[in-house]
Length: 491
Picture 1 (tube, rainbow, N blue to C red):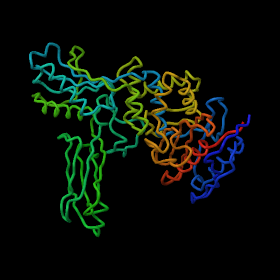
Picture 2 (picture 1 turned 90 degrees about the vertical axis):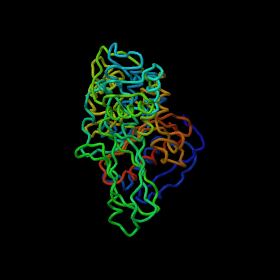
Picture 3 (picture 1 turned 180 degrees about the vertical axis):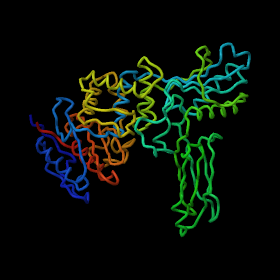
Picture 4 (picture 1 turned 30 degrees about the horizontal axis):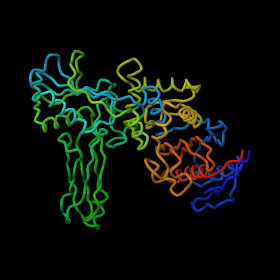
């Protein structure tokens, strides 16, 4: 049946490198063969000359393939891997699942206002724990009358294994929010924020501010305020945590020009569990609860008693955060949590990834045809096809239990998340929802959209093996996203 409707915003793309290659076409419905020609034309962009592309677009109503190109070939998915991690977590753990963070003490250790012995802080994988949550735990101690701990504060992250990085992560991916250490006991995404700005005149030391304020991190600054002619000092400007060897010391060096804007850096810590414990210790001190011992790593005894328990927001919120901003620690924590709930302890990435494969088996995808390595997509060992990603997205669309929660977690073109500044002013804006993915030489975009006449589509686009910035490759993806969001289809 031919569907006649006004064709809003449909573009015909003629390949050229300038990007000024869009012209409107006649209104009316377009045939699938014509749509294929237009997508083929987009892929003739000069940015794609050396690039491999895998694309699959399918109608959610009929299951008909609208377009495909090398969709059965294997690619690195980058952060499109988070689609697998978050989808499986929603299905297997349930959207209302909550992470526990507990304060425990030795049996019979609590007498009157004193914990005689150690206080244990035990994490169960919450990737979204905040300082405010530690204050809540401290308030619970106060309510119970506890004012003194004679022993140590023991940080227990034994719910997960002790591998802090994902399998296949690059050795130099350090001192950065994207590669914060994986732990069952996390705080503030296992990062701190440091803001740096110049002084009021040349020769002044640079000014800095750490958030959260904590003695756990040391700041060593040799940075100076310079004039615009001191190009050497300007080029040398750097804010970085020491990583050879790994230390919780942030060095500030080089120079900033007088009047330059403040710059803010998000930097990872060395050990998430100790970081969380150090902040809790400082919070307890501020609440006049004394700890006579020190903050240490360790394991709470099986005989320990529960004093206070914090529950996270529902899993839906964790999934939302993970996909909207492409939060690596969130995805890795979800996978290890899946591993911990598989029946064996501790939670490992291997067991969690096995659960993901079991889920793929349920909707008849041959799991020998792809390879998984971590939960976030940071590893280059992962290989998967656009067709397999589309199969997952189709399955999630049909699952009424989690459909809304999953789709609402995806960035919206031109509106929020990692798509906030993409496809603005096109038919995709406010409608196309998709997960982005970026590694050096890899750009992925997979999700959902609807045509101008209301045909719901699912798609996966992965481009790889290019040199330089991903901006031009993303521009190609955005043209395809805008095209399929603005077209009316004639079958």
